[in-house]
Image (cartoon, rainbow, N blue to C red; front, side, top):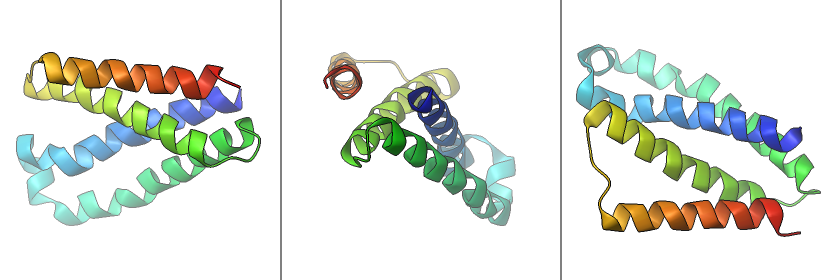
Length: 112
């Protein structure tokens, strides 16, 4: 359960961080309200802290699995969001990177 909660909170944090960092390129509202975007960093940071805590507990007190899992989640979320919101395609290089991220994620979760 800790792993699932950690992944869900981390994915939500990544989605919100995507809007926070890349959103002003697409949405004028975010460009015009920079202080609101900056203040959104507080709850986004909380999501990452909680995600780290849950994955840390799941991994038996190790930090590296959470870092690697968080990185892999970030790669997947970034890819999905850039395809959906910006219409960027997935070329061979990006596809290979996604595959490697999935493999790294599987190693962290299933290799004990």
